[in-house]
Length: 161
Image 1 (tube, rainbow, N blue to C red):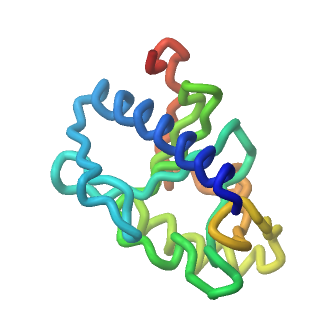
Image 2 (spheres, rainbow, N blue to C red):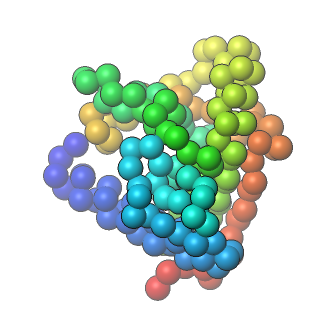
């Protein structure tokens, strides 16, 4: 990743976090990013650890990062996170177009115990835009049982100005 790409990535993530913080606050949550680390991104309501994943538009899948950097074989967030919830957010410009909340242990267990046994040959996505060469596994949203997530499509006027 070049320095320019790093700056663009950090700017995108910072913008997304500001928009998401407003989303959280509008729903009565308290947001704490001061303790963010490799294990999670923020704490909501002083107790819930949250892992956040942002994409720049809506896709029909979620990506599970298995390897963050193939050169160093650094494990991806799917293996490292210590979150209670995974928040998967699709953005358009400075608006949330789809927000998905997964109770982490339920989703992780379903994926490992049920999904992989049936879908052992699912698509992998290689990204060179992350920290080195990143390996992601694609999980179509249509394959995920609806009881495993909360799905919200906020109105466009909840943008940060």
